[in-house]
Length: 177
Length: 154
Image 1: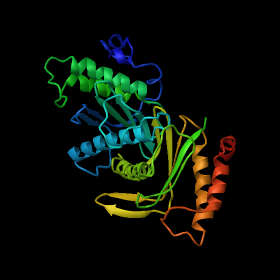
Image 2: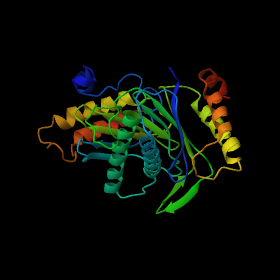
Image 3: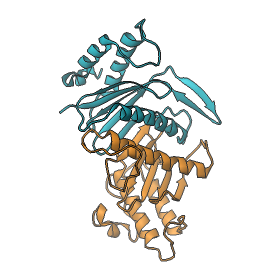
């Protein structure tokens, strides 16, 4: 948590106060889905709030999402116009190595990505017109640290089944613009 | 420093038909640019499959730590219907530019206009093949000139 700047523990307990600028005014169901992957590609959490279209079954969908992120990572590292040493395309990268991306949008959705230094990926899919989601993602990561990583019954690398985490996540996501 | 780093044009089947570099650091050989183009083609297609709602036509803007990538897909697409989703593969033009450069949509449209005028209307050009048209090169480099980029946002 130190990586993402200080006072998050105070922010979270006991009733979460959203970071400034993310939870003002128009509350709505803006978020579509949330994925959390660990560094080996296991989907720890998949939540959906609003998803009318399902093209694949859940497991295939999660695999495809991780594959997309993995390949886009190597794509951005290779195409990065500011670095001289680009390495080879398709070689697995360590978390934080090379040039990464934090969001892309299509005409129907916006995907925002946060990769923690330990390789945990938090992916939030929202309406295409939403603004910068990096702060909200850090907040969600902090909720994950507080309620999942610090839960003594949680075994690392297994799907998340923590009720407190889910309720806090839902509560926070509802406030996103 | 250049506002635009590079320009790619990909045909309907994912092959690179035009690539121009405007001063990015490091060397990228022909093989790498071809692989990047086909990789982008498939990532673009996968992003359509992951859409939560219908009618997705692929990535329009990718924001990375050190650059932005704007992608434009032509409306004349070849469609394949697979399971529930309809996939669209058009000719794609994408530029890599500095983070939060403005008016890139306008520039992409201008490049597409140049492509239709000087490439597609060229009787010696074969569809889906690499672009080797002198007039296109000349007009493109005029359009890309840094000072003109703000003027193109009409």
